[in-house]
Length: 473
Image (cartoon, rainbow, N blue to C red; front, top):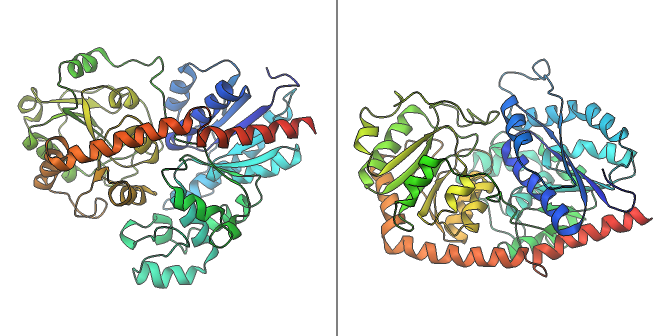
């Protein structure tokens, strides 16, 4: 229970573990480093995520509240874009959020929402709260969203989508069509400016899960009135990297024993996040590629789906049933000495932090990207949806800590030969060794940003000071 002299902040997370995880980590950091009381409201998309979340240990002064499930089936079409679905879910959850905040004896000083929760600012306004947006991905994504929302739709449609010309972002890296956002492909049906452009500029500031040194030029462009600052008009606070800590969650005994037996940095970890899935044909090629590489691997396997977002609204552990029929016949037997297959889910932070892990084949979700960097692990970039192609471009072209298939991972099948080559390069060749050196430097740089006096620590301290000042007014 917060007291009158202690700043109380409410955080609101939209469905999807990619939004929920950084929101929880932000809450933990505000409690442990800035002595806040924090209440996290989240909109769960399934029962499993509620159960796993409520079982997780949280610090004193951090409360987690699940908003009631909302049925939006009567409000959307079967083929409605994911962005629109999330916006509708969040809007339909507002009455529950308002009731819960109204019932609090000591109401929050500030409300921090993710990108899809900006409609909740009307509640913050009603109760006299400061309003912040927490961008759970990177600064380049924010720059692209803001700039594209300022352009006429036809300009994007004719030049970038149909003409496949790069989208030039003032003061930032241009966005090539091959890496563009799905929402820009569907610019006619998805209006991101509705919740990005207008509502974010009415906030008291924008927090981003990145840090100054990682994206310095982009962050400066977001602040500079000659570039994007004139559009945004509110303070920018890079406060990352906020990632899952190892905490009290432990590796499964079998997984730990297997990893403990492997040489240092000899294992590649393969996972496509909490929501990503591959087609049956692509899973077969990936299995053969891993087997032919003859490198040690841990692979988190889900049943195939022709929709890369097949598991987006679900998360959790399920029982495996032995060797699945969607992997090559005899795969487990042939790879028993080099590989370990885990069904559905694995404690990723714990695996990436193990000394035996030296590479990560990933869908490039921003949480996974930051977890890889903060553990000093280079990547094979395999983007599937959302802004993941943009993340892959940054990892390969700007940071030089990843390799990427030559073909599109969302439109074509990556062959077993190319997979084998990427794994061998990452785990055994000079290029892979060079990437490991670079990512270890980034790891140290990230730690400095979060340490007391570091750039991210100071950014969040400024937000904390503003909340304290608002409390005293």
